[in-house]
Image 1 (cartoon, rainbow, N blue to C red):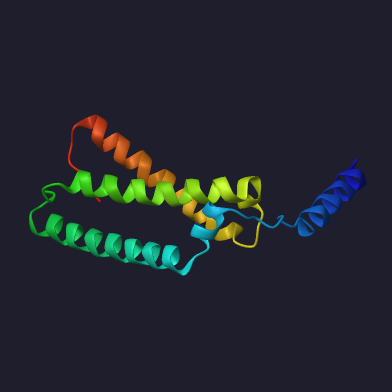
Image 2: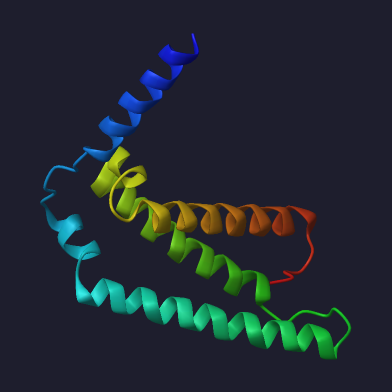
Amino acid sequence: VRDKSLSALKQLREAWEHLEEPERTGLLRAVIHSKWFDGALTLAILANTAYTTVQANFEMKTLGATLEGGLLVDGVFALAFTLELVAKLLVHRAYFFVNHDMAWNLFDLGIVAFSLFEWVLTTLSGGSSSG
């Protein structure tokens, strides 16, 4: 049983290593692989980082109070990053999870899922966002 299991795992690893995503075409593929898209995402990440820093500093200075409109701003960032993720999933489909960007894709998926979860919980609780 052990030898069969090891053999099956070896075959699975070899098959995984030889997976190649078919060439993707179309407008959405062109958009997500454009310099404009990468630049816009980089700016969004930098803006989100700056906003989170300002928000955290404000909360520290005011003993937990949050910035006015913080929940809306968090929602806008969550929506933007969700749309990026959906666009990539639509283009790459299941290969999103096995292509050469797999590690980054899984990282993005985790971050976006956590952000959405936090935003929904904060919204449903009627509280203000904590960043």
